[in-house]
Image (cartoon, rainbow, N blue to C red):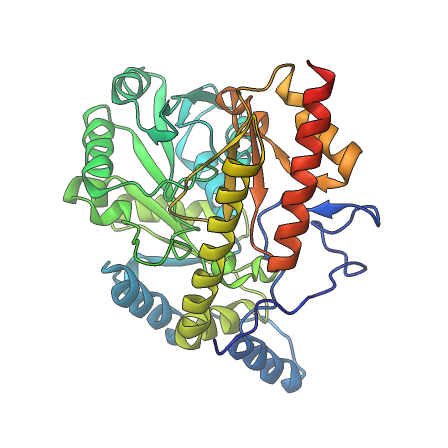
Length: 390
């Protein structure tokens, strides 16, 4: 490998949200990585820093070209320049869009278990969360189209937030599934926000499908949020994009993000995105290989060495969804119990909706030695937990 992902990076004392924990604790929760970003990105930012002036920044042609080229090259998806808008992040984009396209007390459909901040973006804007639970059968997740149509057909439902690929279960939705979602949403006049921030973090040999490319219907009813931040570990630079093929929807989104003042880049946001998509390809490919090995090791260890829980196999993201439904007791306290007893900090599944009650989420984007430490702590914590519920 050209890049060393095993090299330790001490993040304590850097105001890291993830690592603001006790000395004996090991955080494997929030979705950021413990790797330095690609050196090509760091070099580009260094050159920008040396210039020394950090005034108001415009979005240049190179930024548009970077997104258009990357999605065409990597994801076989055409994005026209006029479809693209800069935004400071996917979450600000989603919140602004919910605020602009709904009125209070309208329903927004989400498919649970799903990224917990979706709930905040809906509730904080005076709307109602309408959950359409995914089916979970034999360790695999799929969409429940009967339930989804029921929720979409409610006259109060005007918006759906799709997670593609799906966080936390690591599912890549195929084109047929996405096209069916589009047909149902069009049937009931529901607009789709597709959060595709994890699209570059698929297992080697797997490719995600952009919702807007699944069909002409999907293209015309959708708003897609994308970014280099998850794949290149640059979330703190606040750089993302929205693309909207439909001109009427696009104007509403543009008005929303400008009203909320989240449509202007800081002095480093544009540089980072251009460098990531223009020079970061090899680094990302090697990262994906490394993450794949981390996932394989974690799934094998959990399924073979820890009795009572099982790993849900994922095809995307660096997040591992762990099924603890066979354990006795109240699983909503399981993550706190493990943290208290072993120092391992993972996310409790209930954060992602009621259907996540019996699950844990574990971040695998860290050095191999840390993975081994975390898995051993997880095993210890589960054994201690089981001893309390014999």
